[in-house]
Structure formats: structure tokens, C-alpha cells
Image (cartoon, rainbow, N blue to C red; front, side):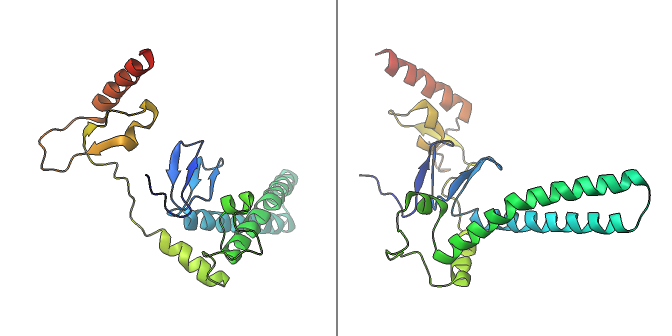
Length: 195
């Protein structure tokens, strides 16, 4: 039996299990989960602030006068800034709301807790939920990409080789590279499919 931690979910796009899974973000091409949700929320805040600054600069540069094409450029830039703000501000508001109720996007969309059922991850206030999310970004990764691969299990799917290998524990003298193991796993997978 395999233990699945709370809020852990499989991302079909990345083909990985993500701890504290929130959503797969197509704009940054990555899953948002336990260890990077705080950075994602900061990205939303900074993107909104950047759009406000762009709109203000365009408004100020339009009022100072100057050549006619500079005014046109500032109007076009302000229009793009307002358009981006129309899409980014509701996204920031939605994630702030999720902080308030202590849910992830995945839980909200799937209606796991609902709005009337007790949610064990809700700490009662926006600031306490925010503090909990920012404590999560300091946790260590359970997957060390810098370790040398020693051997692999027999029943490995070639698509998930990097999650099934056993890492080198210094006490062993073998040092296979990732390419050696992946080639061996692909050959093994082809033999299993052929059989």
C-alpha cells in the first residue's frame, strides 16, 4: 500500500505527483504546489504592481507633452497595461480569496471541502493561512537531482524512470549516469511490451 500525503495530487501534464498541489500553470509551464505557491502569489502581486506602474508612467508621459508619436506610444502602452490588469487583478483576487478560505485551486475546483464543510487546512484568517503557505516554501525537496543513480527497479515504466531509480548512497562504488539507466529502462520496457 502506498501512502499519499494530504493535498498530494498527480499532475497529468507534468506526469508527477505534487505535494500540496494547487494547479498546473500554463503561463509559467510548471505545477504550483507546496514549495512554490508563495513565489507564485508574489509573482501575481508584482505583475499587478508592474501594470499599475506602466499605466501611471504612460499617463505622466502623456501629460508632459512632446512629440505626437510619443503620445500615441504612451496611449498604446497604457491600453496594453489596462488590458493586462483586467486579467491579472481578478486572478490575484481569486488567489487571495483562496488564502482566506485556506483552500487550493484544485480543492476549490473539485469542491472537495465545499464552503459549509469543515476544512482542516483553514487556520481561521488570511494572515495565518498566508504564514502557513510561506513556511511551506522553506521545506526541503524529497527529490535530489544531484545524486548519482545506482540501480533501477525491475518494474519501471520508461516514462517515470527518474522517480523509480535508487540513488547512490556513497557506500556503493558504482556510478551509473542517468543516460545509462534510462537506456536500460527503455530496453526493459520494450522487452515487456514485446512479451
